[in-house]
Image 1 (spheres, rainbow, N blue to C red):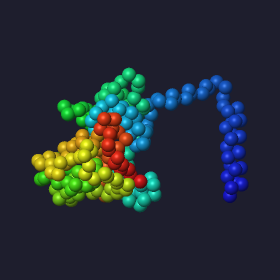
Image 2 (image 1 turned 90 degrees about the horizontal axis):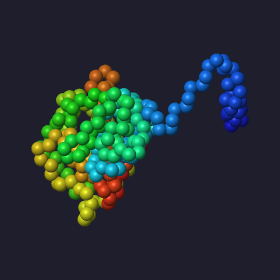
Image 3 (image 1 turned 30 degrees about the vertical axis):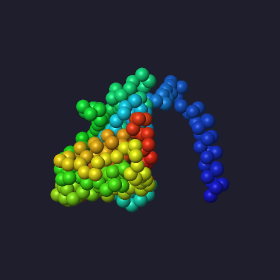
Image 4 (image 1 turned 135 degrees about the vertical axis):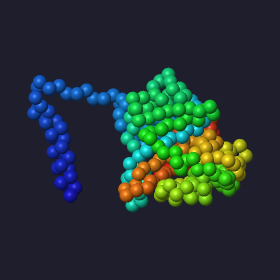
Length: 256
C-alpha cells in the first residue's frame, strides 16, 4: 500500500510539472488570489480574524449564525449539530480598530451584519437567525459559585434553566451540544465573575452578561432539522477577547 501511495504521488507531481504543456497558448492563467483576499472561510478562520479585530476593544462579542444541519460532526461523532456557514472574511486591515475593524473582516459579505450597542458589546449576525428562543425570560437566572467564575458553566446554567427547557420544547428547538475541556478557577479575588442571580433578563441578555463579564465571544447557532423542528447551539470562544478582559481569565471551552 505504501508503494502504491508513493507511485500515486510521483504521478501527481509529474502531471503538475508537465501537464501545463497541454494548455492552449491563447488562454492565460488566472492570477492567484492574495493570501489575505476575502473568500469563503470556515469557523476557525472567522474566529481568528474576529479575535484580531477585537484586540483593541475591552468588551465581549456575540456571534449569531444560521448554519446547515450536520447529521455527523466533522470530527466523526455521530451527533447532529449546527454546522458553521461558509463566510466571506479576511484579516482586518492595518489602521482600523474597534467596530470598524470587525466590519472590515466581513466586508463584501452581504449575509453578515455587524452592530454595536450602547454598552459597547458587538453583535455579528451571519444569516437570518430567529430570536424566538432567545427572547425567553429567565426568572431568575441563578448561578452556583462555580458557574459564576466559568463562562462555559454559566452558559450551561442558562441553557439548562427551566424556562429555556420549556421554551425549547414548545418551539421545537433541540439542544444537542456537547462541551468538553471546561476549566475554571473557582472563586478568587480579582477574577471576573457573574453575580449569583440575574433577574428579569431574557436568555439573550443573560448571554450578553456572560460575554461582557468574561470578555469572550458567545456564539449562538441554529439550523432546521430534516422533518421539522430546529437545533440550536450555544458556546463561547475565549480567543475573541480584548487584552484587558483576558487578564486573569484561564477558561477554555471548545467543541472537540
